[in-house]
Length: 61
Image 1 (tube, rainbow, N blue to C red):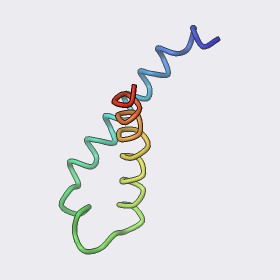
Image 2 (image 1 turned 120 degrees about the vertical axis):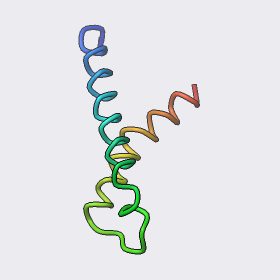
Image 3 (image 1 turned 90 degrees about the vertical axis):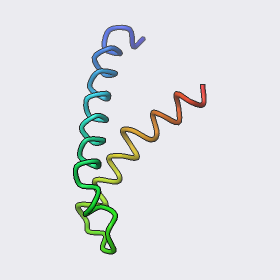
Image 4 (image 1 turned 60 degrees about the vertical axis):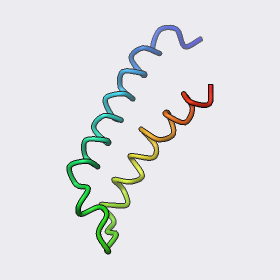
C-alpha cells in the first residue's frame, strides 16, 4: 500500500528531525533559561514530534 512513497517520506522526516535537533542544539542556552517564549515552545514541539517520538517507536520495536 505504501511501497512507492515510504522511502521519500522517511527521508523527509529524517531531514526535518535533523533540522529540529540542530535548531535545539544551536539555541540551547536561550531554550533552557528561566523564560519560555512561544518560539522556544514551538522548537520543543518540533523536537518532540520529529525526534523523540520516532526514537521511542524505534526503541519500542
